[in-house]
Length: 120
Image 1 (cartoon, rainbow, N blue to C red):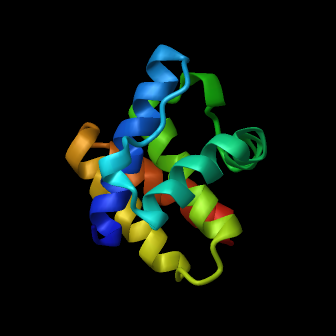
Image 2: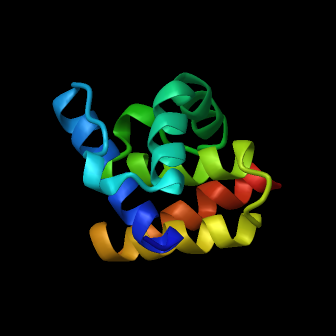
């Protein structure tokens, strides 16, 4: 599985976890190390990630963010804060692609704006 596919699968798993508020792990046939790193990293650092996102929102509260955008922001923020081998612009571009695919027409711009503030 390439990293783009792993990010997309991580998004799906973490979104499901957020929506159903139960423990979701990748199935054994999805034993990709990068996928596991993203899912477990976001799950284990969720409080710190959510705090970082909240601190970089302007005129917006964290609780108002839709689950799609929240999940994408969590993955990208985790990559930016904890995975030094991934260039920040790659994390942002991948997040925008996910937002454009799964969010509405404004999701990509919103994600880009928040992540730009996080890396500033």
